[in-house]
Image (cartoon, rainbow, N blue to C red; front, top):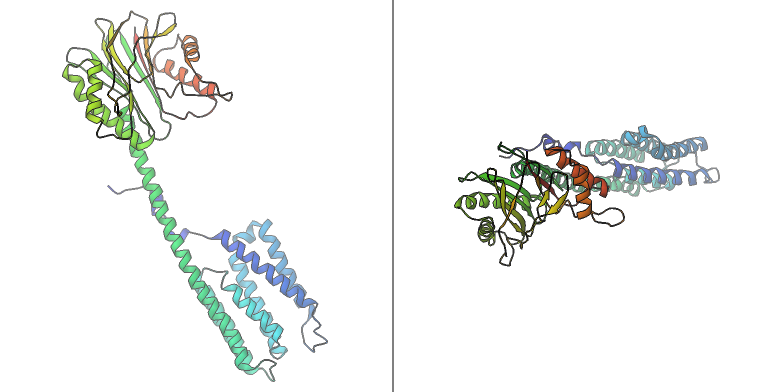
Length: 433
């Protein structure tokens, strides 16, 4: 289904080049100011030219004022395009009037060419440019035709007016082509970004199904879980299956890496677990079966995991550890110790070495499982949140139950680090009540 967030449909016409236009406008205003300022000191009287100095001073100050205003006045920055268009028209009118008064004097012709050339790089609106070029070029041609005793030959003058107008128009077409490509690229990039964001949201929703947060009601037993992804989706998995013999099989796993790829492997591992756990296999055999089934399908990820069978009536657990942190047993006083159990990773290039273990419990005791994201946390002193810190957190929060206990332990680790974790964090608590 190809439905993405509404912002994908945002019109390309909303694309703006304010920053680029602002830079170009500043360059044009600076050029105008310098050119007109030099003209102020030109010996117009000695050359027999009619050119009121006050008009040149006024035009120079206006150019300078708007140049400075582009840095400090938001209103000028916002309306820089229409402001520049007005300035282009006034500059052109100024130059054309002086050309007529002074019989096409070459200095004013250069100013006219400069103004026409500048507008070609200052706009991305073809209608504005064509309107300006048509008006100014037509006026310039008429002035050239009706000027008596021109200093510049008429053919040279007309070519000097028409040529920059054509160059300006061609320049605009080239820029518009580049802008259009940029618009299309941005639009495609937005679509790609929104598609990825949408897929990540779907993956996040799928991820929530990989982490069992709702557990079956079992007499004398309470099970709670906690999950915090490093990114929108992660590679941790917590699942369970009610077995035919009345036991509850729990799968607690951590896939290497992060993101969608790891989440996909987690989903595959859970499906494999649910298939093999009902074949009356011991925990170690179940892990080996998952390894065998996924080894060829998952070449770039490995899995650390624990399969645990809970027997509520007998008050015992059978389990096997595959490269995963050991299970913590917490007594009634909040004192924690690691249970026996070790083994190698599954879904790796090596054949896993796994064993089955057993532990008993009484009322008030708990089993605590966690992913390595909890202990791979460093503080500003580059100290690790290690076993001592976990034991201290457990003891400090011993009176808390269920989700409150798990959240408290996570908060202690977060406070220790004082910065975001760099891995997914999964926690599981089995309480005998």
